[in-house]
Amino acid sequence: MRVLNIGSMNLDNVYRVDHIVAPGETEATGGVEVFLGGKGLNQSVALARAGVEVYQGGMIGEDGQPFLDACATYGVHSAFIRRVGGRSGHTVIQLDKNAQNSILLFGGANQRLTAEYVDGVLAQFGAGDLLLLQNEVNLLPYIVDRAHEKGLRIALNPSPFNEKLDAVDLNKIGLFLLNEVEGFQLTGEREPDAILDAMRVRYPRAAVVLTLGAEGAYYDGDGERVFQPAFPVEAVDTTAAGDTFTGYFIAGLAEGLPVDETLRRSARAAAIAVTRPGAAPSIPGRAEVERALDEKTE
Image 1 (spheres, rainbow, N blue to C red):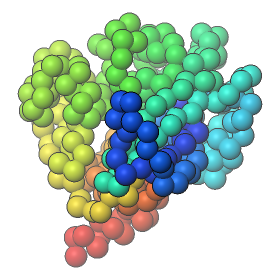
Image 2 (cartoon, rainbow, N blue to C red):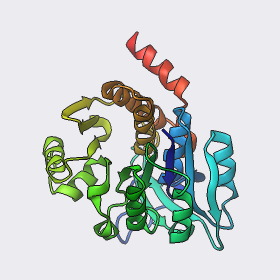
Image 3 (cartoon, helix red, strand yellow):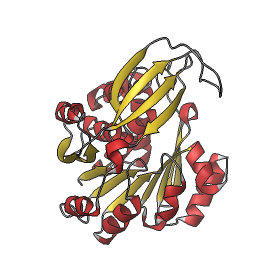
Image 4 (cartoon, rainbow, N blue to C red):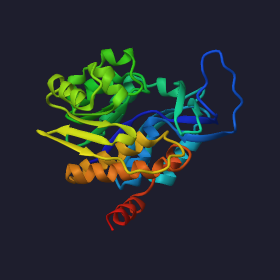
């Protein structure tokens, strides 16, 4: 199974702060760093680091060469990335002393997809392939409709959750990847079991992965519900934790691994990622994850 990820590529400007700034407050930062990120790139890097053949699609701006370099470094196919005029997407991230973050997103080139571009990329894929999507690019309803027509399985991480998702036919999604906030926004429920029950009623043909940060993660699909506790670590930066989990989980699907094993490997990878600064650079390789799992077992 090949994985196509039509997703965002952002330059992450990370400001270290004592606490997340409140409305009307001014706070001096303890430093600033720039990392490559964007949910699209992060998840593609995680997939590649987990050993999956992944193709990154999307748009970069005139400042986007570092994304192409990163794809070459991490083993992500970049032939479907296109360069447009103007700036690439970027974020302003506040990272507090407890490793929690607040993110301001500028779409930039990520919002420049065209129908012609989407059709051209999807023409290279078909039934048996998986399309991974997030809500940081434009034309999401069109992409979902065309991919569904071609028989691709569609996995959606509906982040950021906003009104643009109202136009997406969510009945065409085969796998939802949610955190607890997105689960509430989709269902109106706050408890994990209630979220999963509501998702099963609304989208009975879809599987759901619900991540709960330090509380662990659930999988619900194919008539089973599986829980995976989180691995306790001292977090430094949680920015790419969910994206790491997503990439490793889809890698497990691609390999046909049992769900419990896939969840465990995904949780371990995410736990390693939060102990490092940055987004894409923090994502561990498969060999490191397997060593960490072996050590935990011993």
